Length: 79
Image 1 (tube, rainbow, N blue to C red):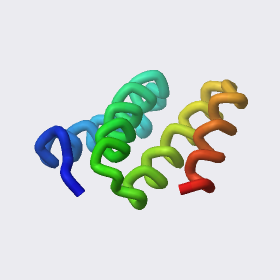
Image 2 (image 1 turned 30 degrees about the vertical axis):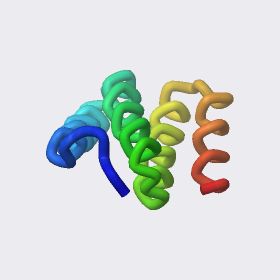
Image 3 (image 1 turned 180 degrees about the vertical axis):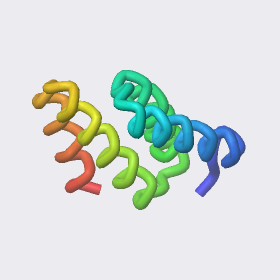
Image 4 (image 1 turned 60 degrees about the horizontal axis):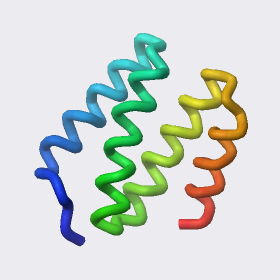
């Protein structure tokens, strides 16, 4: 499992997503969680993929974008 970016960059993005979620800024949650998901896919880290796919699914549900939420929920189930 090799991460493309330093793990600290991904951790900071995860923290920014969590802060945005607490503030209800779902578009920022999507932005940061998507970055983290891309990095997890690059590293082929299945647990991280499931985690960030779940975060994206939650964010899209809050934004009433149910098709995208379902896509990430299914991605979470497959991996």
